[in-house]
Image 1: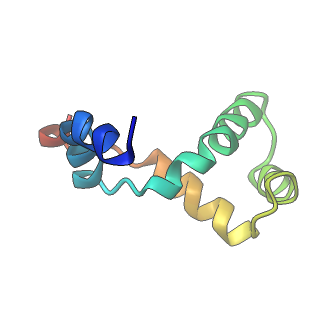
Image 2: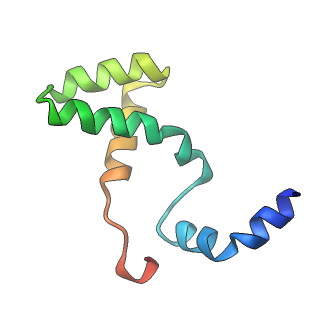
Length: 80
């Protein structure tokens, strides 16, 4: 299967994702956010979570904060 065929097959889904601000690079951070939610449920402090995830995923602490903020954002009703 070619890249064109994959994009063409999933065009509607891709258009919806773009309309809510999704960037393909965001998918790299799904595991990071899942770890964040798990640690938050366990009662860990935000500063500790960010420092640990920054080290674990080799990104800056600012990037971790940005990912958390972005992934917490609700989707608009028209996009889903």
